[in-house]
Length: 306
Image 1 (cartoon, rainbow, N blue to C red):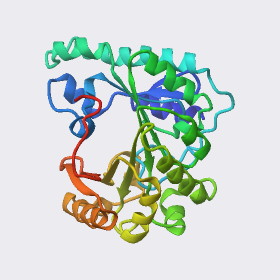
Image 2 (cartoon, one colour):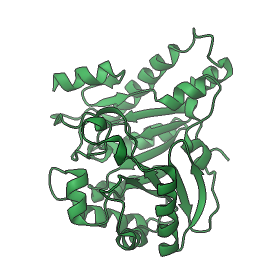
Image 3 (cartoon, rainbow, N blue to C red):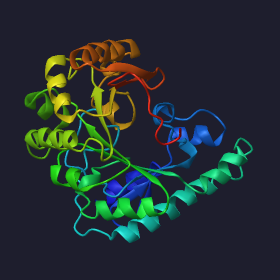
């Protein structure tokens, strides 16, 4: 366990308590220099320099072959920290990251001042956040601080999917069927039925929260069977669908070749076929991130920044 934490710290993760973490991403650095935001800024209005990238659980119950994290370590949590402790520690850790930009001549000081009052919390980063039993309370604490919350989940915990009320809920759908799921996501147990249930729960939550499903395509592993993907997406009826390429980064390079990374054109082709199947339309795209956004009417709702 300590070796896993040591590796995370070496990669500049700020460990909070016994199982939470914060990390500044590439897009935070770009934004702090006055450059562009990540694709979530383009799609939803999130300002990267005002976004906290965190997780309340570095433990995960899957070892997805495309994950850029060191999933080979099977980290398990013995005792969970309180939501209050996690929230306070996360904000403090994020501010420590920001102070590293203050002395750089490349830093946009207007953005630096804005960054000291973060507006968004992306609850994803590493691990599976729905394993954290106090997640509903943690979301409430962040929102009481005036921050929007994005929860990115692998959908294996439908009970928590039903409980939480973030600004936006992301569910990952990385396979069109059970067999592909077991090969690509390599879970501790067969959670396929849980994932289908979570998609159905998402469908029943229309109008309560913003909802997105993200498909990460790995070439020749899960980039087929548009029909089955479509049927699963109909259960969720999400506000947004993101079709995104696997990116050959981090520890995933030990498991996959660069050839496993689809081109943006291949992602767009998959997205167009999927859109036709389920009656959605292309709303936007980001070539640099190899991601295409689908919505029912083809329009974007900049519900956070707009």
